[in-house]
Image (cartoon, rainbow, N blue to C red; front, side, top):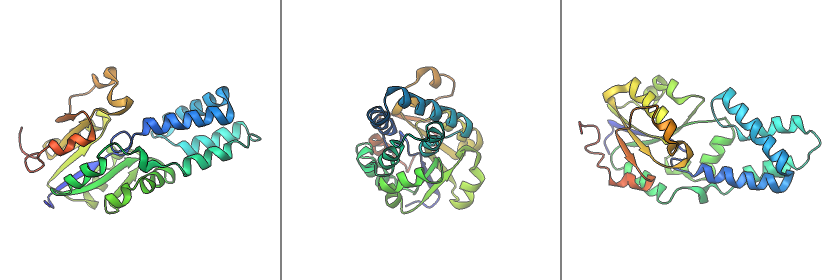
Length: 223
């Protein structure tokens, strides 16, 4: 392992199919609270995302409860979220991709999210142990470069993320010290209008399993 190389992995729609999790939650809400209130939950969720800058499923549930204090179905929804089998939603060969990268450098999760549900998801999915407990969760990770460098110093970084906006932000900050990898998974990565707003990543792959096709011994050199 090259201690001079640190590889930073996003979680949602990079290692774990969060779109599928959201679809399952939508179906559960539809069954438990009905269509109108299910839609109300997602309206609250999106408003909270705009306010906080990250997805907060449990926070949205708290706000939903404030809107419907006598709707006891909310209790089944919290159980659904906390007991969800996140391990089953890992993308095919996601763990193998992580193990492959660990041959070349240190693998670290760097995610945005709340302080309860996001670490819970990472733990239940098995990613916490797959990354040897190397997990960072911020409000806005692109604003925490100094802290990332302090905790995981390296000569070169690789950032793997389904959001081209974030890859561009890291590239602007680190310049030639970073290589960006864009897995075309999930709704953000497939939004062509959004993609056109930002420069291309250094590498684009169709799925996280394709990470094993990259030679990380060469990845920090001009290509």
